[in-house]
Image (tube, rainbow, N blue to C red; front, side, top):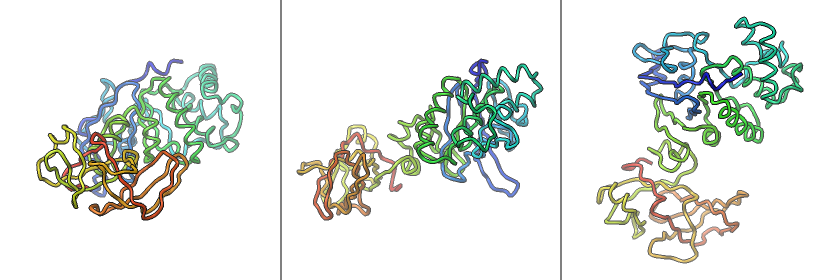
Length: 361
């Protein structure tokens, strides 16, 4: 059974959703997902990611004027049973009165396939997902990871054009979640199926997605690869939602960014071209992009340690800079401890600074 041959592009044009009570859950949205791509919808509760997934599935219908296409096929007004989608839910929605084999083959039975066809396809799924030893087991006899694999096998056995996954790992413990997301990603890439994966977990999004769409208040704040979104966020919301950030204000004076009290950072040529002379701006830098030095140079910031916390693979140091309102967070990967009130010198390479706009923090 060749799953990959069914993969199609997904295109949303000006898709908007307003609920019966007048709530605008999704602002006009344009989105394109390539055949075989895994797109992650990432954001906090209420941002519109699950609404987007339900519109693509056909569980909800868009406001008048929007359009959804699977390849060349317009599915805007088609219900879920006509869209050829597979779904994996947060709860898995497995049938407790059926065993593993029966759960996996349920969609084929509803579609009216013969017993022989069902048996052959289910056997292939059992092998693919390492579920053969559990074929006759009841659902309550399975571990969380095994249930997740059953749900995924049931979703793809019908050869859907699109696979939709709504927080499929959120009910699992951290260690199992970490292992399974790698397995799922490898499986989906091997199958070549077009998939949209919803999560609020930033690390999960970075592992799972070919691209990530970060949603805020019913619209896409940024879409791109994990690296693009992490290193060059469009705004403060995206920067803060994907990892830890340090945010501070200042202004450009010639080729430096002045923070006040004679503290300044060297700017790259690109930043000099980007920033207006003398105009207030907001700079962002990740904790791992700040170095603690033992001696001062012309381009270091003088600070004072507030806290130093050992986190196993790194030490998180909180440093107060006199010219900044908030302390800076620094991740040191050398196993070194710093004392409270200890003076330190901080170095930030110009290329590690990201400017978000005028006073956006």
